[in-house]
Amino acid sequence: MATETPRSDRSGPPPSAPDGAPGSGAAEEGPAAGAAGAQPRASGLRRLRRFAVDTEPLRSAPFRRLWSSTVVTAIGSQLTAVAVPLQIYDDTGSSALVGLAGAAALVPLVVFALWGGAVADLMDRRKLLLISNAGIAVTSLLFWAQAATGMRSVVVLLVLLAVQQALFGINQPTRTASVARLVPARQLPSATALTSTVAQFGQIAGPLLAGALVPVLGLPVLYLLDTLALVVALFAVWRLPALPPLNVAARRAGLADIVAGFRYMTAHRLLLVSFLADVIAMVLGMPRALFPQMAQLDFGGPEGGGTALGVLYAAIPVGALLCGLLSGLYSRVRRHGVMVVLAICVWGLSVAGFGMSGPLWLAAVLLAVAGAADMVSMVFRGAILQTAATDEMRGRMQGVFTVVVAGGPRLADLLHGTVGASAGTRYTVAGGGLLVVVVMLLLTAAVPAFWRYTAER
Image (cartoon, rainbow, N blue to C red; front, side, top):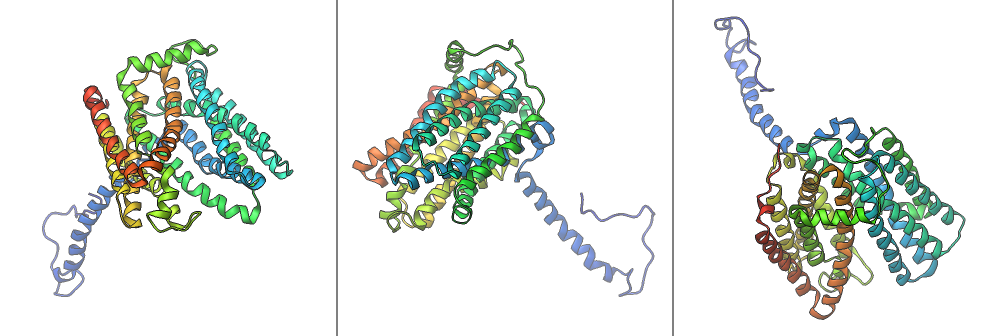
């Protein structure tokens, strides 16, 4: 034990000393008692460290480089995510055109995530990461150029956004499919948690930083900072080892390869359920489209925003971030299927509770719990995806994963907005949360192998 009192090698009792002298029992009683009291404290600290962020995957130099590229771009990408709609609204004053930007981003992201995943299975993933990262950096530089020159063209903005999201659709499945080649299987949950925690931090810090910088330095600076972050990320990716296909010859990817990926997914029910679980949780249970109305009508916020609205939007990512800081637990868990099912049920119950909550603080706590549950679900679904899919299919499965993660919340916005307009916000949110639990339990009963799935050491 680290706090154990050193013992003398000499045999026999120590020489006696007068009472009160430095060597007497009376004088040693205090330090001995202090050492004894320190032992439980040290033991408690060791137990806490077991729950803290598990950084063991970072001992792998290649994963550390890939992860560091994610760190520097997590905030930078959010700067552009804030800058584009802000510039469109400043130039046009139209929220409809801001909404059009969302569609311009989603369609190429979906298409190229599916195709990019197939490409990632058929060529060197390091090379594909370099190409896509460089392309994203160029588009960010072009964003800066058009803003700095005062171009004020919505068409140019939408085209650049579509191109950038297409490149992101290629980059994201390639990046996540590479992780299983860089760390041992037992470290995959912790590696996923490290990456997801950084992404959650970026979602919180990026918009805050953008809001602070725009009044001082101007909107074009956001694009420039994103470009610089991407250049740093490009250097980190350059230092990765080659990641060629393991069991297939390198070749061009086509439609047949995408179709083969879907056939593989439907033939492996474990993978299919992992995707359906996220669809259930997000489409039925993500209430963000109703946050503006609930902030104003249910939590006393002013029209157009206010503290209540900010709290509602921030609560889920804050809960996810805090849960990500406990990733020391993840690598010790083997029942990945159980964790996914329980996490999604907790998500649903927390959302249902939020729908019927009274004070704002309780609503924020319940949404934070939902965010933590979503992080747990994401970590173990990601680990299942990395281990259950073979390397020659891993890119395509990550492409589907990217589509599900990007598309689920947008479908939820449509569903909740439509139902909420007629049924009311509280009943819509609470009903959706409870429906998540019911449908998830039915899916688990239909495919019990998912519940029984246990990761190998």
